[in-house]
Length: 226
Length: 226
Image 1 (cartoon, rainbow over the protein chains, first blue to last red):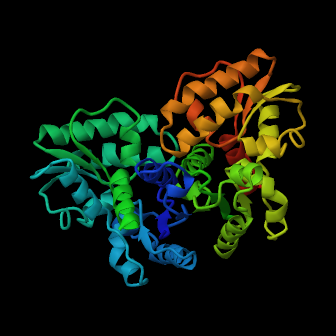
Image 2: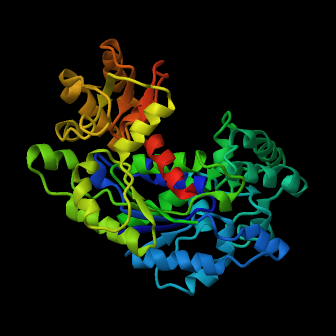
Image 3: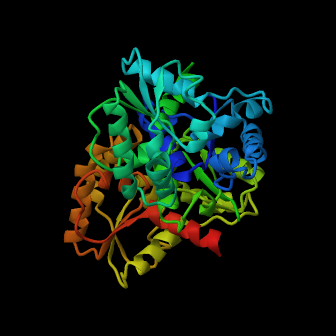
């Protein structure tokens, strides 16, 4: 069986949740039916939004260092449960011969799997992900963004999850998702892997949301079983 | 900051929960405050109880293979979120210069942290763990075991967790824990990393239990911060 490489730690709670979803979504009757996986969880990778929006340290060297570790471990493909890190996708792809499964493609597959055939789609993500237009240029659906709540609601909530204050992240994230729904979103993509953790800490929103952690786990299982 | 190595996949859901507990128990305000970790999750390791009780395939070569991977990744210490695998502790320790934090020592520390000063302690674990007397000879507390429920309740419940049927594992595990409490156990050690997952799927038991996943995570944080 092929070994999956997970370039994680961005943040570490999202990586743990990725491992949980990967396990629970895999058809298995015993340990030996599950997917061999190496998780390189390196939370020291420089902050991706800081790098792109505020001129902070380039995360690419740390990302490539993790890829080297996963290559050395014998992994056959790489997934990255951090949306913003996909802003360095081309740089990472150029640094390795291993395939990297793109999280935006996984989100698009998940929209189709849930029967969402047309937009607009609400998009929540870090300021870096929005600024780099990672979803707008790749998802294949029209995207709505609640720019007026980005710095007041989304970014503080992402920070709360990274600081282990997960329950406090629910209210601001739910407000943004509901705003996007009210503006006509057919579904809302939780396009930062901290966001589904916060959204799961309270009552279900009652409309379709795309958990990009689970979506990436399904893509990984598809690779492993192919 | 030192990198932690996790020899996991036994089972994979317990490894994911270890990563979650490691993250949530670490004092952190941002990604970069968390502990760099490599999780080698190899569910192909031959079944430990099968090996010890029924003459199945020796897991030691697969365990040492994982240790080699963690060494190559640059890890400074190893934890193993699988109690039964500690039956091969001496063989693993002899195969590496890295320290391996012992899960039974972590459980003993957690008993003291919870203020449990004397036994008897209820012990739940796999048939392999009980047969090897991993706890009875190292914990430092008198241990009670519900042998009459071992094959009818404990082992099927462990199997249910490994097969992603976590909620079904609660009732048989809770019954065993309550039996041990009724027999005078001051606390019950959940000495198989599938067991706390099953016990968490229902109402709290109402008496002290030792989650060996969380206990091992605390030991790992202690190592990382030392």
